[in-house]
Length: 211
Image (cartoon, rainbow, N blue to C red; front, side, top):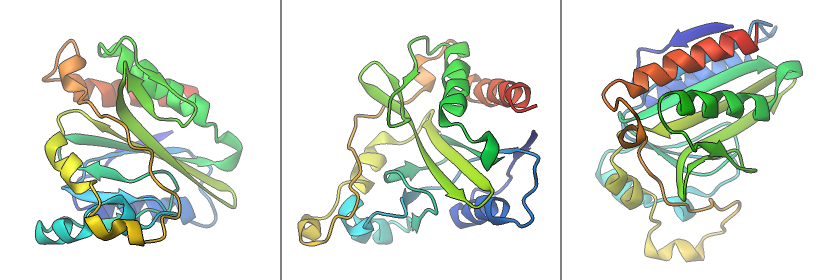
């Protein structure tokens, strides 16, 4: 498995990188794992109406881009306190349970002992969601990507993901499941280094699992 850390923090550049390798033909049979961080943005799933998922007017006033993903799943907030990962795999190797198990084991290794994933493939600590994930399948390729708030601005997350009052007049399509969110760093043994350690451990586990 090839592991890469993307230098850009521009949301559209990172989304384009994911999509490029996901849609590349002929498909590179070597699995890839990307790590990246985005500047503040809102990303919504391919089957969602953004007017029902976030306050698009407030986001525009704040200069926060609202971007549609090529994957499904719910609407999420990204900022520089958020760690993102993306697995791009041959479809024959696609296994959400396998990938989320690696993520959970990596979180447990940095001190989040009770981390677990649920049937919707989000990761939880107690009653708080600490990671979401989304999937895309096309031809011979599969992508599974997720985000983890280590030190995200949860107040801005809540503000951005609160739809405006007239959103009820819009067709909802597929609605997000609203959940309480917690940052990961305060849960860890070493808050200052846990994010780096998480990436290192996940990369090692992924290389072993998809050798």
